[in-house]
Structure formats: C-alpha cells, structure tokens
Amino acid sequence: MRNTTVARTAATLALLAPLAACGAASAGDDPTVTVTVGYQSKTVNTVTAGTLLRSLGTFERELKKLGARDGVTYEVKWQDYATGAPITAQMTAGKIDIGSMGDFPLLLNAARGAQLGRPTKLVSVTGYNLRGGLNTVVTAPGSKLGSLSDLRGRKVSTSIGSAADRTLVRALRRAGIDPDHDIEKLNQQPAVGASALTAGSADALSQFVAWPGLLAHQGKAKALYDGAELNLPTFHGVTARADFAKERPAVLEAFLKAQAAATDYLDEHPVPAAEKVARATGLPAEVVYLYNGAHGIATFDPALKPRLVAALKKDVPVLKSAKLVGDVDVDAFVDDRYVRRALGAGAYARRLSATPPPSRSEVWPKGASRTLEFGTPTALLRHVAAHRSEVRAAYVPDARTGTLWFADRAVWVADGERLVPFVTPSGARAYVSGHAGARLLASYADALKRAAA
Image (cartoon, one colour):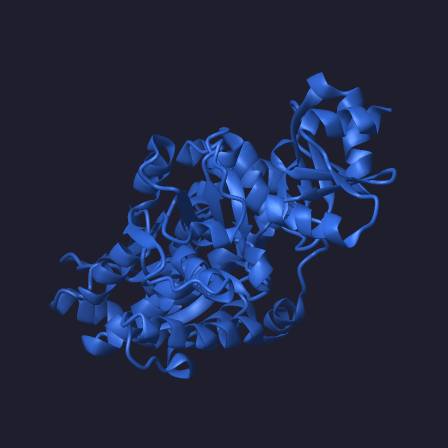
C-alpha cells in the first residue's frame, strides 16, 4: 500500500482536475472521490465482489478507514449488469473502475482494453470450480434430447463470449459437433434465453450460474450437460482498470481486503450469506445455496491460483478461433501484487495453497440457519423420506463429477442397496452401462421409496 504522502498527493491532484479514473473531486478541504464498481447481482459466484460485498457494507467501511487516513471522502457507486460485456464497455470508456466477470469475458476485457489503449488487470478471483461445474446446458423438462449429440441441427441459446459459451463450445467440440455450423446458436441474454427455452423457440440453453439451477429448481428445465464433465477449471474474477490501479492503489487494496472479508463471511455463515444474496437479488435462497453453500458448486477464494491462470491461457485459442479476440497476453493481464499486499504475504500464501472441500450431501431443514450433512446420498434420502415436511432443500453430489445438484432434480440409479445420483441422464446411463445390476429409477419418489424400505 502506498504511504499517506502519496495518498494526499493524489487527493490534491483530484482537487485540480476531474479524475477520469475514479470520479471527480469536489472543491474544498474535504474532497470526495467516487469509486464505481460493476457487478452481476444474479451471477452468484461473483457475490464476494458484488452482491454480498455490497450487502455487508465491507468495502464502504474499508474506504471510511482509508479516508480517515488520507483526508478524502470516498463514495461507492454500484452498477448491476446481466453479463460481463457491458461492464467491459463501461470500463474501457473510463466509467467503471472495478468489475467482476467470468473467464471468457475476462479475456475479452483484456483484449478490448489493450486494443483501445485502456489496459485492465485481473486482480483477484471470486468463485471457481476446478472441473468446470459452474456452467450447465439445460433443456425443457419434457424434451427428448438426451445428450449433447442430440443438439446437432438444434437451436441453442447462450450469451456469446460468456463463460457459458466457453463451456458450450468446448463440450460440442468434444462431442464431434461444430459449434459454428452444426447448431444454430442464439446469442441471447440469460433471461431472454430462459424465456426462449420455456416458449420452445430454443431447444437448449447453455448458461452460467445461477440460471441452470434456477430453472431446474422451478421445474422449467432439466440438465443435459454438466460443465464439470470438461474437467477444466472455470472461474469468475475481479478486473480493474490499470490507470485506476496505478492512481488509486490504496482504494483497490481496500476493495480486495473487503472481498476477502466477504469471502470469510460466506465460508463461516453459508446459510445466512445465501439468504442475504436471495433478498438482494430475488433469487430463491435454495438456488443461491446450491452454488455458494458449504459444499456448493463454487469455491470462493481471491487468490489467483496458477491452475486457474493456466486454464485462462487455454481459453485464448478458443476465442481466437471464434474471431472474438486476437492474441491476449495473459501473463501481462494477471496482476496479483494488489491482492498480495491487501491480504499480506502469509495469508495470501495460505489461500493460494487451499483446496476445495470435498462434496457432501446436505439437507437444509426449514427454519434452520445450518444444514445437516450426510456421508452418502443414500443416507440423505433415508432422512428426507422420514422428515419430508421438515425439509426446505436437499442437495447431492453427482457420483462422477462431484457437482452438487438438487436431490429432487437429480437422475437416480439403484446399484444394489446404494442410491447413486447424477446431474444428467447421460451420466446416469454411462454409470449403468458400466455396473452390472445397476438400473435407472423412474423418479425421485422411487428413490425415496427405496431409501425408506
């Protein structure tokens, strides 16, 4: 962190001219600096840099402490968007200082900033999944589509350039389908794509959190492809304009301290955190918890882990082949010095080496501020069968990928006395074909009956 002399100098300069990088300072002895943060409230694996952070007021408190030291009054302006693209547009126009978005949008952010001479920096991570489980392809509940191969010649809605588009393109290529010619890709905002799926004008929807889980929870969709089958890390991160970071390093570090505090709150109080995000966004708390819970699909950690950076580099050729970017210098884009200083070398090293907790089956009892954990999905089903009226939500990890899913939306297989859950029908069929005597169950109700028996 810069010393107070530098901070006071910056504040004095702010009195003399408007700062495009961080709002405008007012005349007088107590200048006011506005920090503009772009976030995606409904993209719930960015909440530690957006919705939850805003709800907790952590950033404002950090800025108040900073202002007491440097004699500046800081104000935060929060701007909410549905995807990362408009955040990038506003950043490169000098109107947003700090933003959060997914891996594909981050690369577009880096490319656009370099192209316009307004470079940006990736300064931290919000939520990630080391296998790619944050993105899902879903179809309508009554759809006869059973696997990605069935998408050939179909209409698929996604947001081009988004993290969900990344999953769709990679998954289709692995299935031997050309994403540019073998499907009709509809470039739509998540809400528009969800409506298109419901109306039947799209055969499938590939989207990022929380849309697949929300539609499944509402009974409006079923999972066709679990992004974790790619076994390639996916994440969302925080990007800042390079000029803002250079001129206001203490402000950026205050943001990253606040993000770390919000991350700790989420880890220590996952149910209250989910309820806070639900109140702020209108999303069901059960859906938020699916992604952000104690064993949710997303793991939160601000550290810029090498494995995530390596995955980002692997994304560049995919975006280049789609003619969305040219060359992107990922090493120049990634800059962890601010988060290292914000957290301290020792704390940052511990976060850097931390690993996600193992997946567990969970029941969220009605009225409870904590969930119940179970050693196996079968044990969870036995509990649910005996306490149906007391269960608010139940979650189980996919037996192959570990992706958490709603127990009542999972595809269940009976393998002897074991009841085995999967996110997708294709995952369940693959298991059955490799396990003699295993068979698909017709419904969740059948799984509960077997568990009770």
